[in-house]
Image (cartoon, rainbow, N blue to C red; front, side, top):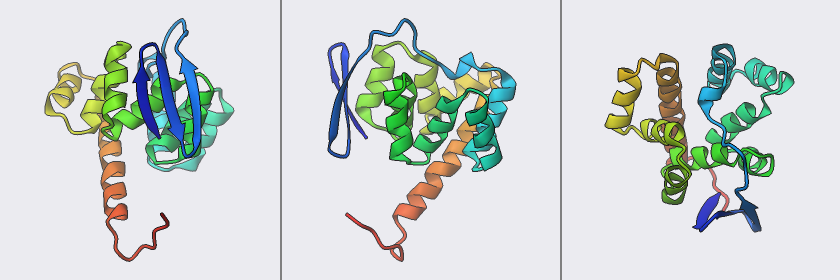
Length: 166
């Protein structure tokens, strides 16, 4: 998914679909909004444990299940985040993937924690140090898990034995 900033508007495309999302939200969501139990379930969901993804879905946290999917390159999950009031989590997924427009969006809308989290997931030393210095151990675990996911995606995309469709 590509994101383009247009003043107070986020233009994004998913395949051939173009939509405008005007950011007239009273508040943006953050991973800091969730109780530790929910965050632990999200961490297990990130690792691929479907039981925890189901827990998130059945207990009122579909946005975290969708964020898991988006981080795992599921474009339907990414689209769901944008269409259902969680654009900041969709943008977070793109920022983790080092998309410049997403990184700029997080900064522009003062999503400081999500911006630092994305930077740490991209292995930015200063951001990782910030999480360590602030004793945010649970998020350090998530960052490590996401490092592993990105590494696997990198290996998978460079596997010459896999058939690709353009």
